[in-house]
Image (tube, rainbow, N blue to C red; front, top):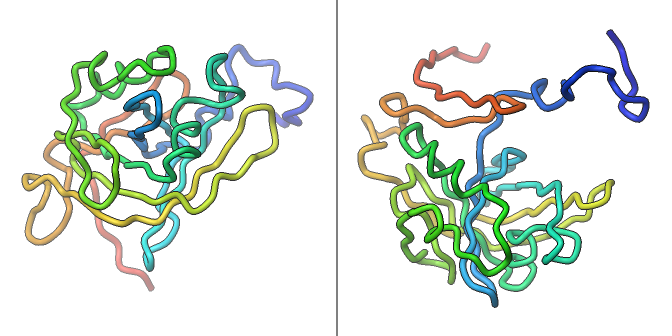
Length: 198
């Protein structure tokens, strides 16, 4: 099968959602004039080591946020955000925080998620996250399409949950890395293997 995206695929569900998978989930927390916000994004990744940098993309809009979502709107105000990394036991909380709530509703409270304050930025983080990356936004890019934005940031502080450190390495094999597979499908990865580069 071959199709051009502009012509449609003719399938019951968009295959693009599942082609690039698994995708890590950036659980983005922000603080703005309307309060604190928390939402998961599966268009997320690390982009550089030195200095450490991340990106996430928002691909929809809310009627109360002028063509974008709460996370991007609040980062445009504050220029900071935190990327929380969830492991398997937090999957239901991640999902609960994805609810389309009105601007100003605190997802930490709505989903029963304990917040903690960041150290290097004025922003909340998820207290129980396996890791949290405190970030200063460097760019917000408008992408092709109606409500597509990419946020780039430099990591200014890193929190690691103590039980996720094994033999000097960050390791989630005990509880699993939570990732998006596409459609309504997710995975919790607990099995890994090593390969030496040639």
